[in-house]
View 1: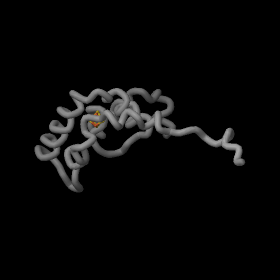
View 2 (view 1 turned 120 degrees about the vertical axis):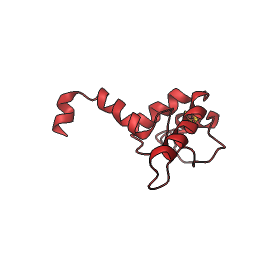
View 3 (view 1 turned 60 degrees about the vertical axis):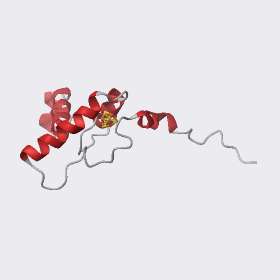
View 4 (view 1 turned 135 degrees about the horizontal axis):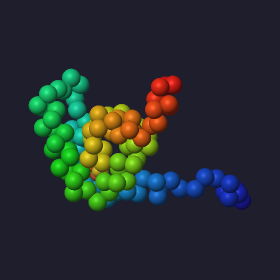
Length: 100
Ligand code: SF4
């Protein structure tokens, strides 16, 4: 019989929040911009995504995931990629930013 005591455990708990996501059945078009999208089109799409996020029961977990993994694209946890980048810059001490 195999000894499984040293195998890593299930990672189900890590992703469990996604099962309750308000965007779960909406597809990704509202949350990720197509290549080259700019200006008003982008603002309108981002706002539509943010409206979904505003009522999402797992918004905090989603945002924390996006910040932790530095998700480079899309609206996560109610913030666009630019807003998350600014938030991460604010969290990073100046001495670390200067050496990067
Ligand atoms: S916060 Fe927004 S992007 Fe994140 S799971 Fe909820 S609806 Fe989806």
